[in-house]
Image (cartoon, rainbow, N blue to C red):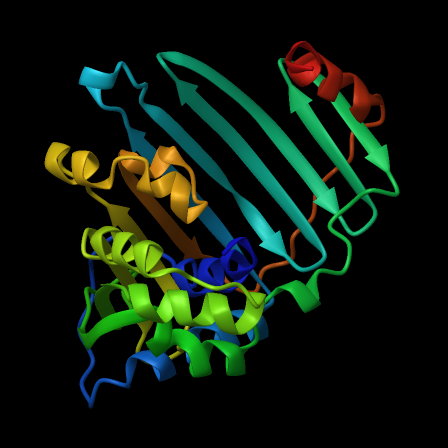
Amino acid sequence: MRKLIPLLAVLVLAACGGSSTGEQGGGQPPAPADLAASAVGALEEAGSAHYVFEVEVGGDAEEDSSDIGLRVEGDASKDAATADVSVEFDGIGLSGTVLANQDEVFVDFMGRWYGERGLGLGDRADEVPSEADVREYFDTLFTGTVAEGPAIDGAATWRFEGKLDADGFADLTEKFEDENVTAEQRALLRLVAEKTHFVLDVGQEDDLPRHVEFRLELSEEDVEALGDGLDVLGIGSRLGENVAVSLDLSDFGTTVEYDAPSDYRPLDELSDQLFGGLE
């Protein structure tokens, strides 16, 4: 199922956000697949956006699990990206900055720059689902409806609200990965899918995605019913806890630039510093 993640990610993360102000527009709501596909196309045409990406994972106190928080904010285009990253795990916070383009990447960690030339964003266009892909498969992966959404940064929006379609996800897994999804796996996926909540807000006038959120909320009874099922699905036990993911986009179409550090250490040194003790 892992090969479906790029497609699922684009469908889930095709949106942006802001404050609720302004007047609502009118007209007939578009079909869910048309709304999502138009958002992907409009974002590609805009070429860049400012983003705020946040993940929260709530631990289970009875299982002595830890809360995890991730926030990434910056600007991104196909040619360059910046990111201010902060992570909190079990009460410990870490932060850093990432700068990258097609040919280089730099990381500022604990006041020191690390980097490497010849290693960058690269050409990943083939890995990203197209507008046509989204239009074809959105209704297979998600079930829900479109209605008037909140005004965001003064723009009227359409809101898709729904959840993951378990059988659709399983069917696409079999289609694209030549992998059989067993009856047991489908049953587990249905249980998980029923506990998901997906929201996508898209501008009525410009089709630009503005906000997305994806939540998984499992009760103690749900976790008990799943048992080791998430490992059976191949998606890891971390989803056995409450998960909230959101993406907010704004400032579309601006040029993404940064000043590369003139003094930096090899990126391998940072890798050794962070992960050397895990070997």
